[in-house]
Image (tube, rainbow, N blue to C red):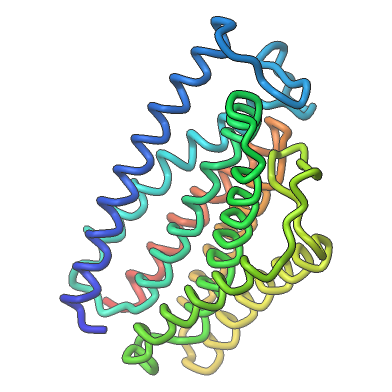
Length: 271
């Protein structure tokens, strides 16, 4: 992937992320206003009243989604501006990570759409979308830790296609349980414990890969990148699996902190 092609790819996705994030935010706030005025009712016995910091509440899902609506386009445009002249293929994998994050927008709509339209097919699509996005996000950062621009930059386009096809194939294979709605409004999937365990292992392996790169290349900056990416993935995992407001805040803080540290170290690695 040439620098020009990568920049075009980054700008296109950044514009797409901004459009989708703005559209979803406006539509969702309209829905929340309708709930607050009593025009529609939330399903699953939840409400917008009495949010508490250390108890499960729908407000935490709203906060998480609005944070992601701000985080995704902000980070994507920052990547485009900061890495425009930097030959880093990791940028392409970071954009795939953000693409996976985009699917989290379906969560706050689950208690709205199912009661308003009663579409069980929506739950199936939402479940598969969430599984696809989370899988893509985790494996994209793992792949970035293995394929360094200095060694395997020419393989980036092939890797992107493989990651997209692989994650889409898994999302269509794994069974979705529309009866099981988690407290964080994720849809239950088959082998959920194994899936979560695999995600955690992938996060650990990503950090380990950067540590190995630091030793092989005799460059401690890889350690800084690894710490940043680990905080990103940990924050992403906490933010999107928790329904508790305090944990949502922790996840958002870790995601923002890790992103800043990872991008700063990555930029220094190639300059």
